[in-house]
Image (cartoon, rainbow, N blue to C red; front, side):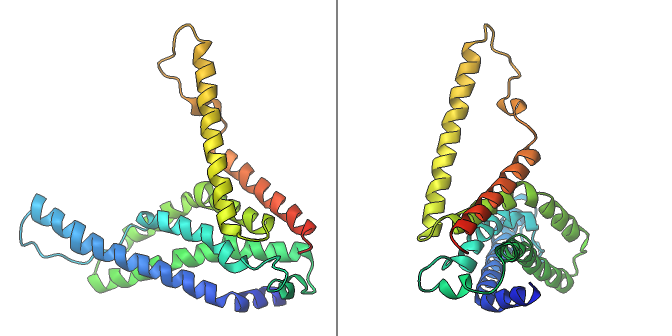
Length: 242
């Protein structure tokens, strides 16, 4: 399995470099906007005109949206040719068990890529902090808060992408996005109907009614959805003769 993992790192090195470069570019754009557009305007309008602006590191949580998008796209970058009758033959024919292949897939997508995408803005923030003489205390608080939201939102979001990579043979990304949109619309309609039925049976509408109070904890739901999607993808992978 170690040799296969090394093979996967070498095979996907271009994808890793691309993801890191995109994350670094996004960080640079956010840094420029925050320090030389937003912060400069705030200082000159609200505080004192002519105040000297010092470059401040970013709150990593401000990069959560592009981070989640890159995390979602990453499985398609690494395994977009999987099950391709021509380009995917070399990967499927490797003398490694299906469980080991799936474990390496999860290791790359769920561990290596999130850590790598987080490391890029963290290292850049350290450089900016040291160059500008800004304390690093707020930086580590930002990183801790960022990781606390990772398992409840970004990883389940990526689990949909992993399922799509293993479920579809062709046009994996677009079919997965379309499926995700259809499920989202369906759940929204179901929630609206459930709320309407609940209220129609009440003689007096409760003032503090919240549909979320009828559901389990968010972390529990997200964990269950993630595991189910992984299991479904693995079973589909076995049928596809991965």
